[in-house]
Amino acid sequence: MMGWKQQIVLRFIRETRGQEIAEAAVVLPLMFTVILGIFWFGQAFSIYGTITQAARQGVRAAVTPACTTCASAGDPSTNAYNAVQNTLQSAHMNPSLLRQPPTPPSFCACGQTTCTGGGAACDGNQSNICVQGIAHNNGNLSENLVQLSSGTTGAGVCGVSVSFQYPYTFWLPFASISNQKIWIQAQAEMRAETQ
Image 1 (tube, rainbow, N blue to C red):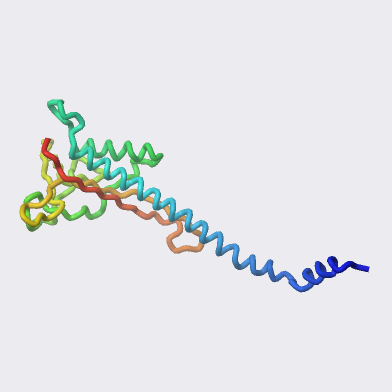
Image 2 (image 1 turned 90 degrees about the horizontal axis):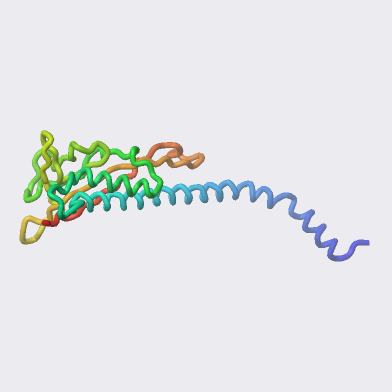
């Protein structure tokens, strides 16, 4: 003769008939897909934060000379790339994967109210990042600041812009963007200070 506890356990075993297993088979793949999506979007957001910080460091290095008491403060475009490279390396990211944006941000030359010729071009001295506001013409360095914003009473704020893209491969099973390279863009501008 079975006790009442054993009868309750047997009744539960007979009544479920594998329903929980079927529900788990439907719910678990969806749950794992959502968890993977959260992980990969989190990775992309982390990369975006890092490259945005690298762009800020790069533009800061471009507008401020490396040595204020030296006769030659160095090449601002090279200083910008070195700062971007150092920031990415400290975050364990590969700076050789950087590329210029296909279309650079549209900035006018400083003091111009209308852009002619599509706006300020990227400095030709850098191939991985776009530095606008610094130019190398026939090996000579010139500061061609760009118009960052329009002022209400004057010519506005002039400075330098640094922009670039970094690749990211998103992996999520059964998604249309799975294993496709996505280029995440970073851009920073800073007002030029007179030293």
